[in-house]
Image 1: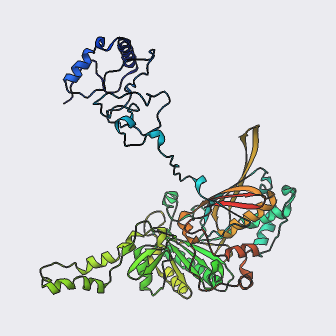
Image 2: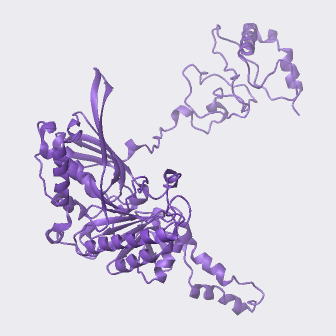
Length: 563
């Protein structure tokens, strides 16, 4: 029960009340300058002590105007449940050699007015504590790497923002002849090698045509009024859009038949090494198909992310052999590799033999009938606990290799759950993205625009030029653009990269059976439609793990990148 004491207000004080309180304490300090036997004690304080309230000792002699050190007073704005904060003692705080009144105890309502070393001599003073560096997870604390070339990044980017001290005016308003020439160069896979530095980029027709060539990609299906990438989490963007196939089973069948033809065409191009890679983007997961020779693998590979227990079980039932690269089997335990920890710990997978052994001791004691054993369903759920925990996580990525990729192709074509049955994406086939043309594909262009802004500098304002690229930016496009900007911006620019997060896990390092000959790989993939330097980069083993490039800075033709 709260006891009201006149003159004692432990709660929050309004400014006028604080002023009155200060005046009252100033008079008390003036009276404290007299001898101790003359020191009066306020009536409000006597009443509070009689009520059993724990108060600070009465202020000692000295004050703001006195010669001695002033005793620290209670902060009137402090909450009653505050605790003394561990902070460095202010320079104008109480002296360390000031004697402490006997019987004094910690008052949790006071802040920065407790002499820790006097009450607790075994503790170290606050000012003597070692300075522990503050742990920060900001982007600037992530270690960066420097190299003459960027590491391969297999994630799909949704936006690129390049900035430079030199203008990007050469990227605006391409002439009709330059645009046509760029499209022809792409269709014919023309190899263009730009000089190390271009003196006047705006007048370079070769640069502008190559820029147009780098923005081309191929898409199926193509519906101009619908955003077909990304598909994961795109329901909000598609809400309210016209979708005449959502309630028309015949139209859905036609769309899926056309999509199956395009999908099969892409796989055949990949198999014959005329297409380096392509993506299948569904509303639940994304699949990356890579030709043999890319990412250090001598077989066709397919990465699926994210997956669920239901999808993996359906793939097993179809006879598709796959592995979970981020999960390794060790006896009866499944645990993550050291460099790609799942974060939820190791889970014990109990086999049927282990279950029988675990109950054998009950039979030896003769009480097996009195103890209720777990049923088969409980045992099965316990076995699959680890699989449920990693669903929809990057660790659930599945790897399919070799001839099993063809089985995966048939599985995806016939899988009914591949297409949403309700919502804005109902009846809409998955999106196919490819760097080269295929049957039923539509040529699309990434959107590019340049912006000039003024930024504040030490000597005033300076010009800052930026170039923004939006759309499904695939790995070959990122490499082509960085090679192009290296020449146009004289080896000095920076870039912010915005990846589609579900595809960042495609950068994991897969197990390699043998080291491939780089020259042989380049020769076999000569007709895949990529620049030789881009092909050489995509042939390298990925090093980024589950992350992707997010910040790239080039200075003097040297890359400094962060992931």
